[in-house]
Amino acid sequence: MAVSIIQLIFMNIRKLKYCLLIFFFTNLFACTSNQTKEVKTTQTEITEPITELKEKEVVESKISKNELIIYQKSFLGLTPHTNIKDYEGKLEKGLLRTGEGDFDIFNIKDENENTVGYFVPFGENEDKVGSVTVTSELAQTEDGIKIGDTFETLLKKYPNLKVFGSEIEGYTQAIVENISFRLDENHYNHQLKISEIKKETKIIEITIQ
Image (cartoon, rainbow, N blue to C red; front, side, top):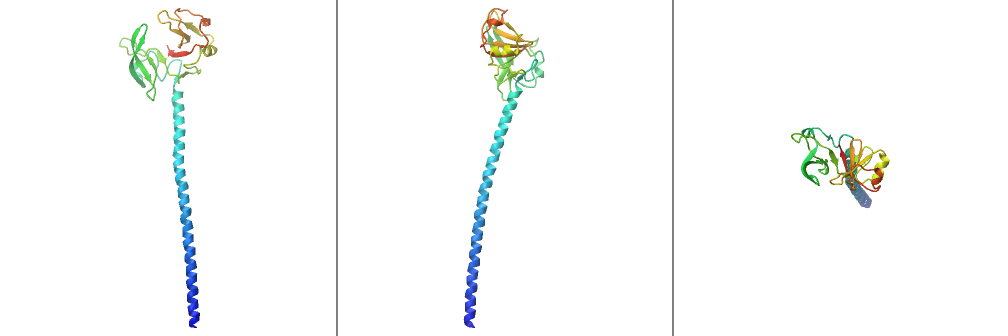
């Protein structure tokens, strides 16, 4: 009887050891699995913000470019002959040097503080917006004409345009309605023929008269 009790005790000890081993390996596997999940979660959290930032930068870039449209009567909200004080955009005083003299101007700034054009004020108190000249290569007319385009491109878009030179500076321009396209070519005769302008000559400024 005593032998049976001892045998029973040893059998229970063996079962207890077996249960402890199962419990140990079960917990070890669970810990390893949780660590793997934590690593995967961390990687996902890092990746998502970077993707969102890139998409945001692309959208902001497109918005900035699309805002620089040269309309028939305005650019960035500036319209010739209106009061300067009424303009809600960004302006900076500057100086324009030409063959006809030096002129005080207002440089036009975009939302990123880049100079994209200018105008010479006029009026009794120089409080009016003069002709608005655009200098940014990112700007374009409603028809898609921009600085850097050739005279040939301009002529295809506006076959009835007129061209003029200037006696003092040789300032050459092509005019379509109230928009003037300055060309990178000098002509000192006021009246010009289209055939006198080289087709590869590029536009260097666009002005709303």
